[in-house]
Every structure is written in structure tokens, then in C-alpha cells.
Length: 100
Image (cartoon, rainbow, N blue to C red; front, side, top):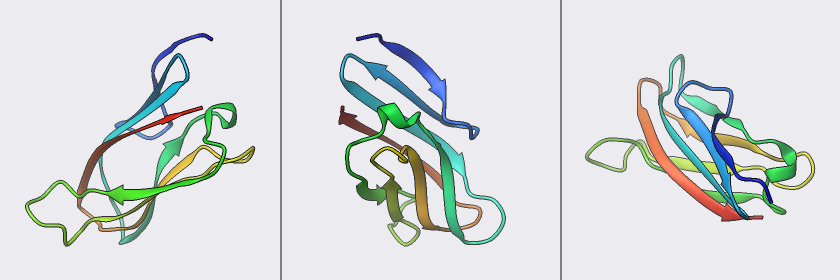
């Protein structure tokens, strides 16, 4: 299987890479506009997880008041990474790994 170096997910500060059968996503970006869902980008559908992944989107601050859900869509139409209910002006940083 071919390794793929860090590649943009289409949104500034969001990247993905493939090493063997492991996909790694990383992001360091700030929500602009109004509060609400924040699409961090996507990976090609062939590298999306078989089923979706739900995790915590950690806000980069001293408390968890601005943390939100992190959703990675799976299946053949998958690959989109979204922070659900993100707060405007809030920086979000993190990394997610999964096997394909």
C-alpha cells in the first residue's frame, strides 16, 4: 500500500496522511462567523472509515465549555470531518487516527 504524506483536507490548518493502513487527521484552526457546525475538510472517500466516527472536538482553552462533538463521516460517501456546534472565535486543535 502507498504512503501519502501530509495533504490538505481543503481547509486552512487541516491535514491528513496515510501510513500503511493508518490514516491520521490533524487540525489547528479557528471557527469564524457564527456559532455552528464547522467543516474541517475531508479525506478521499476511499480512505474514509467503514462506519462513521464520533469523538470530542477539543477547544484550545483552559476549560471544556467550548468543546464540541467531532464527526467523521464513513462509508462510500464519507470522509468529511465536522465539528458540531463549534463556537465562533474559538481555536480547535487535535489529531485523530484510525485504521482502514
